[in-house]
Image (tube, rainbow over all chains, first blue to last red; front, side, top):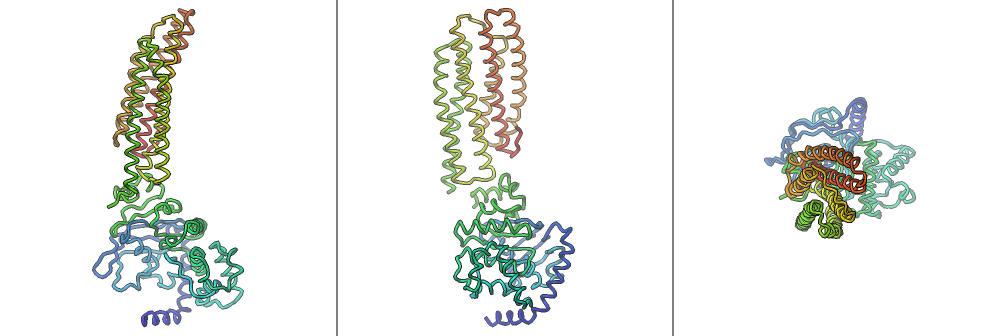
Length: 285
Length: 216
């Protein structure tokens, strides 16, 4: 708890400086974006939790404006991999990463500030995590701590983000109401809108629909398909139907190794590795 | 879920093998009826087509149900899709056995006793061996290399068809009084040629099942 307070205080204090760093990353990445086909380029990445090696020699290029699904049994390393992409694992004690991870051409450990990275690589979690604040404040919170004070500007960001997350019509008349009063599906879309408000280029989703009913799941899936026009999406999912429905590429992880990474259609019609075939056809274990 | 899947797939496979046997039997019997002018046997084949149609329908239902309920992928998916296509071809082969039987009866009713043209037995034999082969190949995976040989056999049948057409045209010119019978025989050899095509189609779907390659 004491540690978290320290982090948050540090986080708030460094905001302005980080914002500048974020802008610098954005500018340089925008310059590269015109030509860069891949958002992430991971090579020879190993990840250790103390002595335990959770990811082994991962090589993977994640293409821009595509949905990449990460599948595999529990404990295979897919969520660990996801969290490494925006350095969320930095907070995990004993976590050590080696190898090369490049985000829009830059080494995320050497050339990019972690906070700036997290503005550009947003994350949505399994359980919706709205702040106990109004719908408006949930969205405005990020831009505000980034230093945006102008009400009109904030209003515009809130509206744009909610529209992009397909929430505007159902939430525009209750912006001042608590976000905790929304349904689970609405809360999750609000969290996506909150992520979009930080103007990311990548959205990481860690089982974003596993706590939702089929209708809310469908809305999130439709949303992901719309958002990929502008963003790169990496999604961890336990639902292979979901991976088939929405992803362009699928990566199958097993015991910390990337077993197969392929076009989703090819992976589910003719997987090249027998282990993938065993897993996706339910003959695993 | 997996246990149910395996069980239903095994059940479908057994039904397919049973259907395959019935179709093979119909193909054998259709030749016997044609060669021996066995009207009674021809009538049995003709009537038996409904039984085969019911078996086909039953297999199709099972295949579609498994696809819908289990959402199979990879080789499982390809196998169910291939089976569905193969069922259509088996059904057509059996239909042509009934068609040939219909003309056996018709030929006998005319009392002209036009002989079967030379080479028809060999043509029928090649086609019949294709049907037996592909039904055998269906039973096991990994038979695509053998299945690909069916294309050569199909070419032999096509060539035999062309030769027989010429023979029958010449016969018809020589014996115009029997032209109706010769027309019946033209139809019979056309059915034999189509049956070989369907056997070849089955081979192509077996190749798809095993390799994900669509050749048709």
